[in-house]
Image: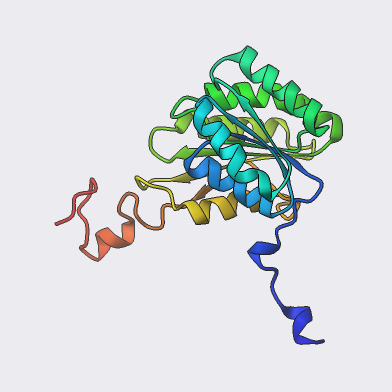
Length: 220
């Protein structure tokens, strides 16, 4: 075999051509970075956000990378979310991927987005849903991920969480992980929590054994 046959697939080769993604909370921060990563992988992207000015700035910035639409959405208002989902289907033909970067510690926003979009995914027998959470404080959102994953386990729809215990999630790592979870390359992982804390969360057992941290998270 040649060396090329053994070469690992680069993360830059995540293939989302022909897929349509909704990024909920796309105007700035991680949501904006995820939308950019998905576009670079070939996806069409519907940008959702409540901040109209930043949303349309994002639409203008990301437009040169691929097919982009934008909808002003209050993620906690069911009629807003339902209308935006209908607009995305009308503009793009379908929805294959849902990335929930909006909603804070409440699962209401992601729940409403899933309720609006999962029926569209079920008709095609395919979908990828990724919820972004904090390891501390977003227990309800993580529970929602796991419940949906179990309910949809035989449908071709995978549901996962990307989370961090650190104050700031590493945007580049998170965007690449989310893009992989949004692709067909992720073919079986569902109901999982992918921890991107980078060791910056609560002290581990190893730290306590080595004397670097005291129980309860206090460092000596």
